Image 1 (cartoon, rainbow, N blue to C red):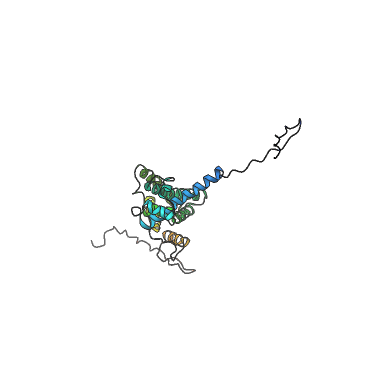
Image 2: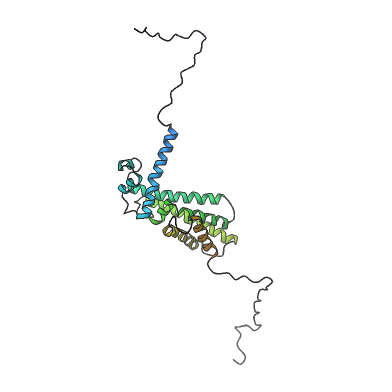
Amino acid sequence: MAPPSRPPEAPKPGEHRPRALAQPSPWPQAPVREQQREAKRNAVLSTPAQMFNERGFPATSLDDIAARLQVSKPTLYYYVKNKDEILLQCVSQGLQMTLEGIEASRQAGGNAVDQLRACMKVYADIVMQPFGMCLIRVGDEEVPEPSRTELRRMKSEIDHAFRRLVAQGVQEGSLAPCDPKMSAFMIAGALSWIGRWYQPGGDYTPEQVAQQCIATLCDGVLRRVEAPAGAVAPKTPRKSRRSSSAPLAGN
């Protein structure tokens, strides 16, 4: 029979014994858990955004989204309430990315034309990504109120950012005189249309699409005829000394 185990001896006065090392927890730490949850939530949003772009919002069900994500439908409800909330988050993400990109371009400095080109590049890049494409292809029409009003407010911020830059460029003399409101509508409208016809994996890379579209908007499509070297600009004919309003002789 084994002798009974002795209880640990009490430490002697002045003696310090090292503490036993704590065993690591098998559960992820709080920051790690938050990162994992955020990554899963991004997947829950980016995947349906792609499906909305491919099929349209009405034709995409939560069952379809769960099947694409290879999760159960109850798992989706852990991250979102319903399909309307998914769309709201997707469109909001696209708008927020655009606003943050425009603000970063503005903070980078430069004249109005430099900032306008940078903002156009940001906008073109985003509408070729899932969230931005969802913003263009689905829009806010399917989003219920009052969220729709908030999304339209965010859209107006983008429009006013383009207006301010156009107006500033006209004031600087770097842009031709124009109506800033109409010009901003045309710029945003042309770039938004990229989100409807662009297909990932097509003949052009996103970088090529953005560069060519911005060059066309800024430089136009008309070929500019350059004067040969040394050529003298034609003189404007002088007006006749006789006033055009003067009566002709004999009248």
